[in-house]
Length: 223
Image 1: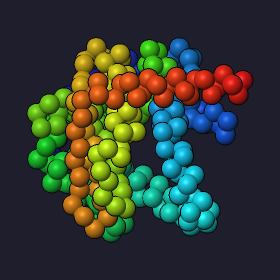
Image 2: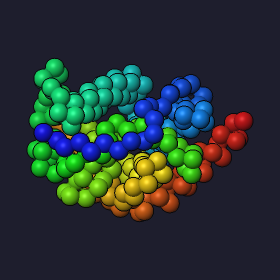
Image 3: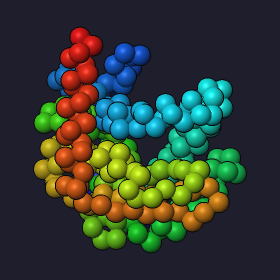
């Protein structure tokens, strides 16, 4: 059983608006709107995604993307239930296998949990998002993100993930006053052992801020 020490954010949730032009936007309790961190950081991978879609073709790209998205959503859901000490039996076998891969890491390395699927926003960054998990990892307060992948990924190829978690760390401190500098990616990989990557928040804040600036410049140009 996981120990919960949930920290009050001062609100239950954030409303979400989605549009084709602006992507996903979160609305804070005062009515201010913020683009989602995933929408903004999509800039970092858009070129490689375009090249991949051109290489494999639109039909195949859509098939792979839809399957990966569905799997990722289900794995997030089963992990969330487990961290909440809830029943995890009602999932398909391939999702149960991903969970079985991740479970030893969760059991041995995740300590007291401060937040699960926490809705966060930052006026400083002008961003918002939903953080998978805020908890102790290997005894250190951490921002934890759960990912799935069809293949092994190298650490230098997932800078967008660490920029995303740096954003969550900044949002968390702004909302709670609790500084967290440790960020962790826990990744289930098809037919391989899960991967765990750790990084310091501040190693990716420059990339985060530069990407936010680029996104805002594009929005001004479109306007």
